[in-house]
Length: 421
Image 1: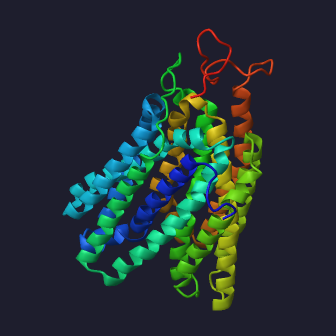
Image 2: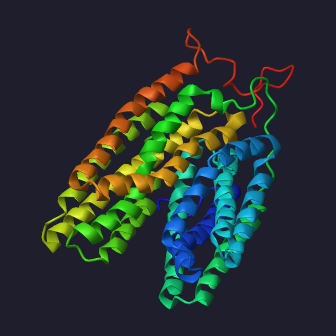
């Protein structure tokens, strides 16, 4: 990475907490479904249904917890969400049927969504002049942690016994608890001052909601590499099956090495809108290359798929950087948690509905389905700059001056200075 360690101690603490958290996430992402199907012996369809229920239930959690983080201090709320995630994950070893599974996984998923919203004010508070760039750095750190977790999970998958999987679950829970403990080293952040106006300001911000919806559509791209390409590679191409791991490794290395650099030039909402547009075009090209890999010789299929993954990852870098910029730059500082909780709704819907949509179009629809998905991303990329301009215009008065409410920072009584949360 361009910078091995952040500049300040709070940033290093946040990075360490994210890294430990990501190791736990990598353990579950790699072997969580296998634990419930192979060790607990739940039917795969039941596991898929339970995960979908958990994803939908967690959508509204981020908004409420983000508001709590703004009003009662982000550090304490973040630690509480991580502690709850650790307890819910540890409860996986007690799951012996469908409804206990739904209860445990819904609690863990809801705590994860809540934690993402609660940490947003911490990133803004400790991220320096450009918290968006620090968020990009944290994404690179997260990918390193997830990769390490995936390697550790490989041992449990290879052994395949109930005991091995239970060790994996215990390690997952310990990682979340350790992440909470590291976060306690941060200095406490003061709650944002109470402001006049509606409590659920973000839900009334229609331009921001439009950007949330567009980002949610674009966020389906994250499932292309983990759902659509593996199924397509195995079922429709002559490429060797080990290339599934190769595609993920290629993506991870590029994200770790380039995410910070990709974010540096995206320093305004307008620039972020352009990044979305470029990302949509990249995803269209990538989807076209994947569709062409069917029915080709092994060498050609390998080259097409790896090239598609590289192009897709470039689009992913632009999409992530654009999302960091618009979500933070267009959120008022005194309501960062609430706004970032709302912005997470789009990604939450993509998480819940994206796999089914991609399977129906890309796997069920074949080559035409891949072009349809690519076109969906491209159109979304074209619409996002328009939504960004609308959001910026909504934050200004007709004279061009910034409107005093509801987006300005609250002012201290009796002074002309702004009170910085």
